[in-house]
Amino acid sequence: MVSALLVALRASVVTLVLTGVMYPLVVTGVAQVLFSQEANGSLVKDEQGREVGSALIGQGFTQPGYFQPRPSAAGAGYDATASGGSNLGPTSQKLRDRAVADADRLRRENPEAPGPVPAELVTASASGLDPHVSPESALWQVPRVARARGVDPARVRTLVASQVEGRTFGVLGEPRVNVLTLNLAMDRQFGGPARAPASP
Image 1 (tube, one colour):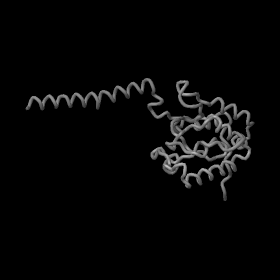
Image 2 (cartoon, helix red, strand yellow):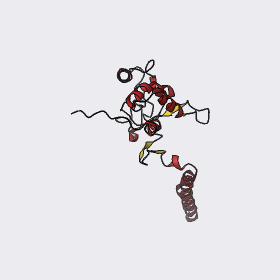
Image 3 (cartoon, helix red, strand yellow):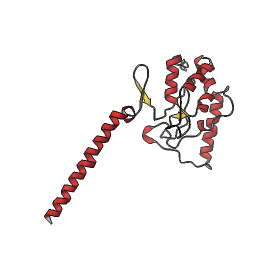
């Protein structure tokens, strides 16, 4: 009886050390050596070296001189601590009303945009934190962004094209543009957009 208990105790201690201490240390060490940027949150810095976000987590942009991401249902919007979709189905009137309101707003804000509002700009992702839009959705916003910054739209389109990320491993997913890194590239190339004057 005592010997069986000692064997079980030894097995528990060895398992605890191997799986609870050694394995996490090895995995963390390998991640830090081989994938340091990703292991530390894929943080993005501006030109002053300040951390302004993560390349993996979307955030809202409302100024006309910045590209806008997909809408977010995470918490109060783009809340990384409350990732999730709205769970509203295709027959939900609430979802339809929100999408129609977003489409109307986007048409007002982008009067020179070509064609209809891209569907992804009125539909939230399942996580509510998708940091990417399609190249088509970014290009659709170019007239507004170029006008707000006083820049030739052709130059903005060229910058968007330079920010397109290909399919993962060449086969997974679709080409996409990270909204945060695109907006930072805009600031680097053209300077920050002029802010609207504060209302009295």
